[in-house]
Length: 432
Ligand code: GLN
Image (tube, rainbow, N blue to C red; front, top):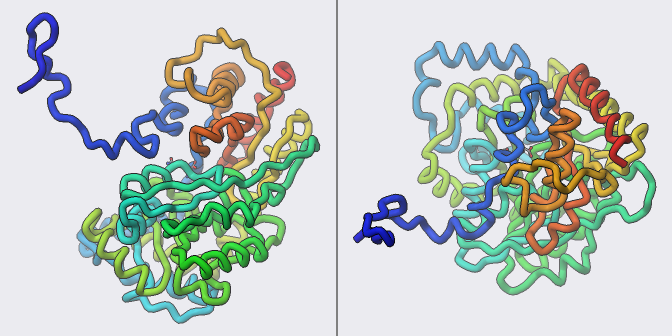
């Protein structure tokens, strides 16, 4: 029976209680992407918030998508493993990087974006109460993906640079291996290693990955290597794949993304690469979650990977991103606020703890009661016209104060837009 209100009227507004699993993993809190969505901000605000491009995928890739849409088979279900052409393309592209002759039937799985792939790994491997270690700050989606599958997140910090110089490198965000070891318990099942890292831009060194790998071996952990920004590693720095370290192939699943590679974040095409012992159970989960992924765009992603090398696509794309990074970071140098120069990914963390704003500013309810960074980012978006993402969102509640010092600016935008944005951001000096 529906409950009666005081006036005796039956309240039908909440007849069916929703699952308690939504009460965990911050799932009910409004997510940062929705709060800082363009629709909530002034129409002319420049979006350096949510990480998506303001340019289209390359024309030769979208042409392949159009062709697929005009054929018959690619408009229908694909095999749950993914379309064979894309799996073959992944094999040719990644095989040499992983020094393996990848088996397209058992070692590659196409997923509905990297997110769904990761979710399916959690579904396939977590028992109730299994612990998953993630480095803070962490990409926010990991948290509910773990808790929805009965897992328990365990946080190990990346320690921010402590000195007062304007420009730090993302490799000054450091991992304390002793601290990581202390976080491991008999219930630890998995560790997520995100390199290049969102939001820090850190590219983990071989040494750091070797130390993590040795703990994974010692405690028999599954390693989720989230490498969706693998095509964005700057300054000749080496992108080390943890799956390539001795013994690690057998316990590592590597995650990739067409969205990042081909400026197509809305396509929701990603992939997992790993041993059959990880991919096959994950296929079982993924088949029952989505059955298969978007078919025509798998064909387009296949074209992207097939032709990338002869077109020198990733080399050219990387130099374009290096120029974009420079526009933003040069401006931060000049403004004089501390920031982290990313070695990878397309994010810059700006220290906004010195940015002052009136506490009685007319903030919307969505940012009140959250970290100071939510209010600072809101103020900067509305007053200066450039949006960013408050970094406390990437921390658990107990450590949110560390993230509150930072705003994340995305530079996956064309240079003209970035130049316009930095003109506006120069006004930060008025608030320091
Ligand atoms: N990966 C993107 C970012 O960090 C977008 C994430 C999302 O919208 N869920 O900006």
